[in-house]
Image 1 (cartoon, rainbow, N blue to C red):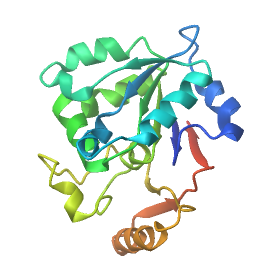
Image 2 (cartoon, one colour):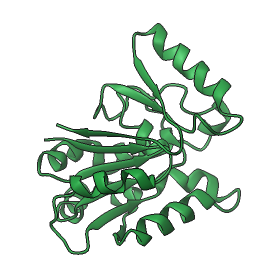
Image 3 (tube, helix red, strand yellow):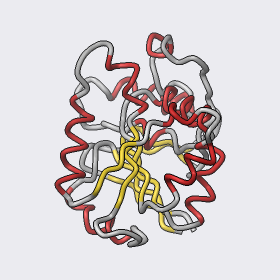
Length: 204
């Protein structure tokens, strides 16, 4: 069993019912692990409005967000698993794709996510959280954005067989997204452009 909800930005209104239909209904209201490690490299530069916006939206849908910082669980993978297992969904918010991949590796999240998915939990990811689900995340950040990543891991979680290229409809993003697509196409990897009003749902 594998249930993924991958988006550019939050849960677009037209996908709300589909998102809720994925949930295992373990809790009322549904409980969602709210994971924002990806934004940490940017907090020193100022506010992270996309985090605030996403939190506000998900909360407005009646979801109970349970804050979980992956980097607090270095060497504590079992504890992380125990916290995540009873929840309905894991939500990986946007930011730096390589930084969240690093956090996933250090905490052991990448070792337990498939078991959690098999048990029925939903993986939700927006922007970087959607990108990291791919087999490979090369070029997901500009070189300057990797300076705050202690260990650069190019292998994604491999939860799906394609790479999401988010924010296709946002001015200033297209040229860079096309460059990423061309890079991955050279290696035979599939990519999918996604606007901020679209989502990809996997339920298999």
